[in-house]
Image 1 (tube, rainbow, N blue to C red):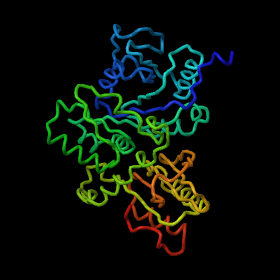
Image 2: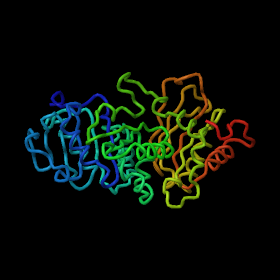
Image 3: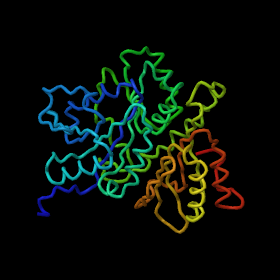
Image 4: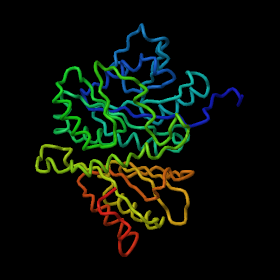
Length: 359
């Protein structure tokens, strides 16, 4: 009986698709579900009715699941997300649904993505079966700037993204697109911006943004961390443009990289992280880092969303000759100096090891 079970050798990569109401997420999903590049993908959505699935494109259907002609499985969230994902995985193992190799979870337009990320990063059963690949956020090229001004949730959706999709580019003028692009690059320097017209995008551009690189079947920390993007953002002084505009929610959000030259003491580092979580957890939207720990020859990779941290991953070797610790933060209403100074004070009496504001 055991041999008949279809258990994948690796955790299945899971992507989160988020975006504010009216940002074109539904149009995008409708196009993705019939795209040939979405074969062997399971898409978990809130409501089939919102998508308006064309019955000619549906091969098979049940009350909460449809199999598209393109080979993409579409599953509706029924109640609790954890139960939906556990149930979907069980059906895959038993052969009741096709053996999908990728998972996409759609959030509602008003949703803060953090709770779903927490679910994937903290539920012990899901952690064994799925690995977080990344967050894909849709931003409307026509109304995106106004939404960022008015809705803090839309700022958080863009801030935690690994990929930002600029939708409705066919309806926006070039000046609008350029202005919004500059704003999003300041908010989230490392996320590539992908233009979408009429909801059409190549699925290949959306996935593979996590720590694990499916092409090389290895952990690619430099591609995942993209510390140089924060260095460029800091170097060009982007953050000084609109400090006094109280109508801009994204002016409250900062992206930066803290670099530490000396090996870090593991216990002191843990105490520092505990302090940050206790005092500022809700304001630390996202953290990624590679750490040089005292007494260890291999680097440690950390990843956190608000008050929750994924269990650290040890790399087999340093990705380059640079063995400094690098921590990339996206935070709300907190200065970069707070992180630099507290990391210094937790780790040493004097602080020659911390580079002044440079990454």
